[in-house]
Image 1: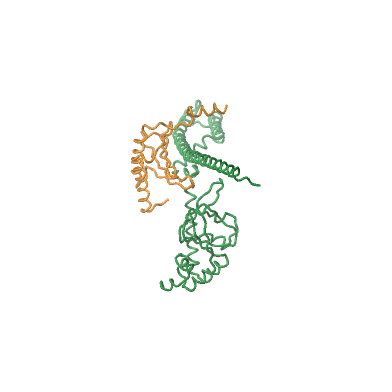
Image 2 (image 1 turned 90 degrees about the vertical axis):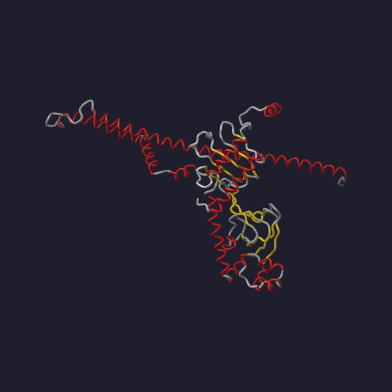
Length: 297
Length: 122
């Protein structure tokens, strides 16, 4: 097989090194090589942008490529960094839609580009390769899902919600209900009913055989119940307050991380901008000197 | 999130590298005024040791947070991590020793440089 590979054209040989095409016979590689364009990108060059029309699949021969998207906060989120042998741009080729992400060359990069039609023909002719492509897409989806949970700007409420125990959830519910107008009205209503019942109803009908009333004025049993409620409520509310303090502390930590990163990034951007300004000034000066030396007619 | 043993080893090596760079003075840590935070820039990454609570409060776990400047990805390792916790504490102690005499970064401080700049533009 290796002897046969040596007889292939240079393009077919480089395709043979790509894992996606590893199952192809030499004559198939040669045939595929006819449909593949060789493209080069310098470090930092854009290969395609999000929402561009997908015109082909790319396979990295040498160099590295960053796949990224803009998130809702208009910041670039890196989805993957691809190395030689990896392919990208398959989604837009498969559904013939727009690019779902942008691709930028990290270093000087050499790519094989397979047109949409050629790629679809290739998949139909090689079901094994189709399975490889599906596996790769699934792996990238899994990676993207993990990335979402690793964002620096995490939602503290969601993070805290995950850590809550059953007792803490109950404490929060009790504290939330205890601090509402609903609780005050219900409690006030219950007190009034109790007092009214013991003053006007049980005073006439609530006497036992010995003549004792159920809870006569000044309502000792009611006071005991109120004290017990207050005694139980206090630690529950304190538990809830501890949770709130913990949440505030986490939020402050989260803010610190994001703010510090933003601040240092801005510092770096300003420094780079000043450097660019100085370079531009230098270039303008050189240009002016050149114009003075060689005045244009 | 689950972590395999290979990843744990790589993270342990990473923390050890940070600790050795700190000890040799190649990694410069800055102190945040009024807080126990320490941060450093390392190969286009931001490294933060926190939280703000002082180290004397032993019951509050410490964390190591690493994030690249050009990506929102991040790694956070806590001192209560069963496998890497001791390494994080080791790094925290090393950084504390090294940055003890470092003057704290205070964004609200009135500096000579800032005053001169404001006066020159007035």
